[in-house]
Image (cartoon, one colour):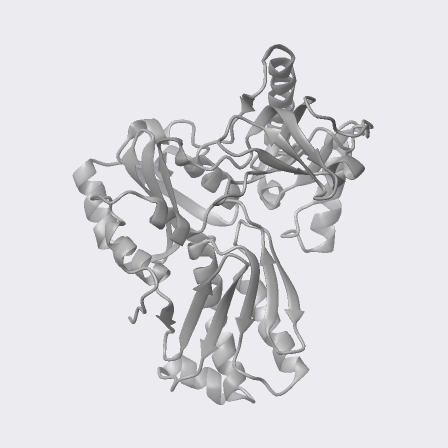
Length: 413
């Protein structure tokens, strides 16, 4: 039976907070306020403002305060056959891959990708692939065969894990819907003047439901009925409540406390030990600190292990994965585990962390241990991190107001 995922949507209209809980613990938090929502996935018609070969990029006017950043190497791999150099004043169809961050403009691509629940359409290339979450050989072979049938040689496709349990008819209907969206984008591009928005990604809640489908048994609770419209869920998985009831649910799950913890520098681990997490612009680090572990389950795990540091590191992996997801740490991440004796032990810890990150809907790659013994990994940067979201938010009575006061402080359970 799939693990249960509870999604709470607090707020209404353009201002809302979405929190995801599993077994009472928060896994993900998104805040949308007016025009501050993520632009990732948005398809735009822009104009080349400047081309800087020395920087390896073109800057594109897309209607935001800062011009978008389009790598010139995009031209080398762009699969439309149009490899002519970009020139100032040229109109281009682009998609946002990463949101604006500080003084850096949005990161753009010309290789458009339109995601669905079962498949991802790449209309400008013919690549056929399968989600990395599909691991069994027979399932990958089936998914690849499905992708080739859908593509028919004139569009790219990635078959997602959720397709494994879906009806063929539903997958084909979604594929055709994505093709129709692409045709609509091209039609709009013919008649609109840049800068223009041609397509917006679905709201955060809908994207969360889409991305977690097949991994969890999902329920959604909200006080605004408009938010619940169009969700691809059975009616018994959707619940509308009053604002008072939502506030009670929000408080009952300890949402503010869990946000405070996610903004703290130090987090205590179950049974003992701590994580010290530092988020910087260039990279983020996680330091696993030893302590006296307690509790019957951990004691049993440690006694059955050839190494106490190994057992402590293994016990820390689940919380490290949760903190990375909840804080939305991205870019380069370095994890300083407690020193281990052998390469086999380090590989065991790497495997445990990979397993703990399986349900992360953001692409994560573990590169291995460095010569200094640090585990190096990268996580795709899309939205702002949790600390950036909270720092940007205005002071007020929003449910997360207490979290703003605790940024940078230690938190002990």
